[in-house]
Image (cartoon, one colour):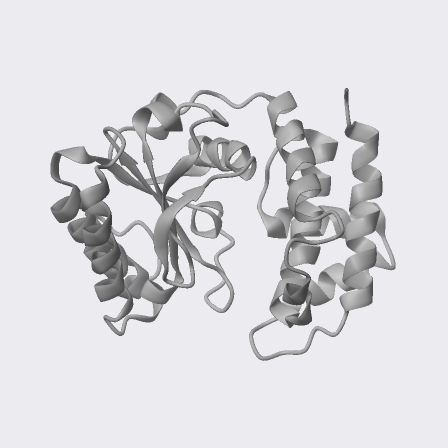
Length: 259
């Protein structure tokens, strides 16, 4: 395949991923796509994951899942650093076209390297929008032929759902906020949520953060700048401010809630 990213080592990993997926899936395979920060142009080698989507012809037979898990384990153990950053989903054609809550259980590779069938939450309304708009095809049909347009009202409902499910106290995993990385991630995620609520559109975290700095001013602008500048190993001792910014976002989101 041609080089889909400006990063040679990532392209090598994607070559290996494509070969492994095609070998395991055979006729079940439809396409492999990139999304997330690599598709938006905001990839940060220090903090970003490599988000991928595999589209399958149908629901994968259960007996193929251990083979996929073993393939991913081999790729992670290859010694190529980007392989440890892979995070992706295997979604069949029928389920990809639009978000359908009764049909959201699909195989996933988590960024911690575990592979399992897992539920895809309302954030996948937004992921579908992003994939259709900016997804990078490694191989396969154009995504706009596989995913229906996502309406602005659906994007708003998705953001409101995410804020309610994941970011409303009591948090599902409050211990995560002990991590500087998670605090920075939370701040930038709130910027993105606020942007979508305001404009019924989805942009990268960087674009949303720069907008939020200008729109909100201090004290949030300074907190957002620290989140943008954070790198692994650096401090981000702003838990109280992070909680306050989440609450600010939750309060602002109520202006957009509908019955």
